[in-house]
Length: 480
Image (cartoon, rainbow, N blue to C red):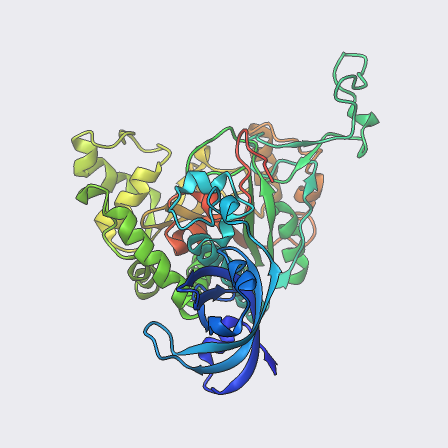
């Protein structure tokens, strides 16, 4: 007797074989037809019960949400909507679900808002929407590793606890085991971190980039893929306090090679999702179409979900300098008619999502890579151009989401990097090891960061980033 998952049975070409299947009841109609789901696919498998051969008390326990085991014969289905079904010979209740309790939860057939589902994050993955999102997330994560492993990268585990702030923004979560009510103080009345576990002030990492650079300068091509943290008090649909970052670093790559890598990588993982998440993406696309029926026409997406994903694959990413982009935005109708929330008036402005989306969706009608940003709005580690006012930075912009990737050619010159750090008040003592890289065989090198949840959000079409991570961490929310 074969013990299979539902996704395997639905693809099976063999019928009239004995099988065992376990899962959760999605529906039980006419005391005869069980719709069973085991999480391996968004689809259910129909299990047909001859109620005359089963005790009534047993069948009463076949309720929505109950976990059951079914033994029977896989046969060609006589009904519509499925190719095969199981003629049940034995039914076992593995875990009951009280119908009255189910009515109060997301397992109820009643449609719940995404906000309500977040309050029951331990159960929401049982819904079709979140099952589809999380299966897609899993496939995307696998594709990330597959791409880099196939292209000669070494996976590097960057530290989660760090004494440095890679972004220089100061929005970090402190890590300490000092007494919160009575911490030791130094002679100046400040907290004495020499008494702490690490004998210095430490935080949760905001990026593995700086550490990845040290490994790239020895192993050539490396990538990190792990959790990162930002103590930014933001409640937008695009920000999380805990999220996962993908950060490749490559020795001897200049900015052009870095842009090539970003485009090739993104296309690979999105194509992987299209090929391996077909049922889930079809469901999510239809869900999005239903959701947008209630929106005004001008707020609806111009492209269906899978059309938007193919749009990324089928178009070369347009490469545009920041200076050219500013000129385009200054002359644009939304800017001249003051339709933008943030009006572009001069070179040096920090672009907002509305500007990025205009460039992608309205002007170029293709994914865009902006490069050579003003040095004053970018991080200290980006290579200074010969003009002295721009750096070799790059951002990849997507429809509907704006920036999805940020990266740069790193500053490889010791004197220039040291001068930039001092000008930005970044401790050269704390980051002596980062400066050391420029003294021991320095070379051109580049990398980028891609927030994994942004990628999942784009691929699944979900409007809020809190709905693409199992348990979102946001200001005021660390439930579950």
